Image (cartoon, rainbow, N blue to C red):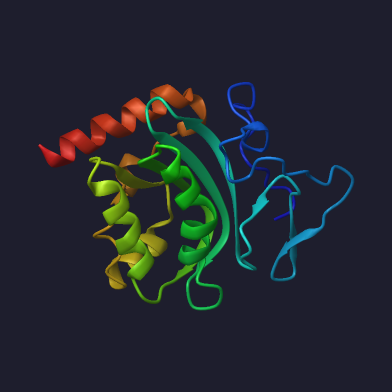
Length: 190
């Protein structure tokens, strides 16, 4: 896992640790060694800790004018052990919401497992953004994770892209990815 880096080709457009409005503003990264773990596995030092022992994130891009954030995840989304949705919501999402972000693209290619619990924080997040016609899209999550989320009835709060609609988002610029997601959501609604 230590070789999986957060996506870095948009760093010329956005760096969360340099953004005064970001919940990750001022973060300093260990450039000389691995000091973060998920269970017993070291992960790349560029991932951001949200106080979870099972999941780390990277805010890849934020467009305050458009109200959109793109966040990449790694690890295990585990609401049973650390209540990861609470940590994500309280430590990251709430700050972004206060700064006008109401649309979220959550990239989950590096999420290996999901263990759900209560849906309170999912529902709260949904209610926080629905007034502004916001959305949360879970992008490129593994099939078994989507199935687990559906079994836990949290699919009501998120939009999913399915396996047939896998998006090679790394080939796109952030604005193009956002446009592609918006088009997909409009098609689903219409």
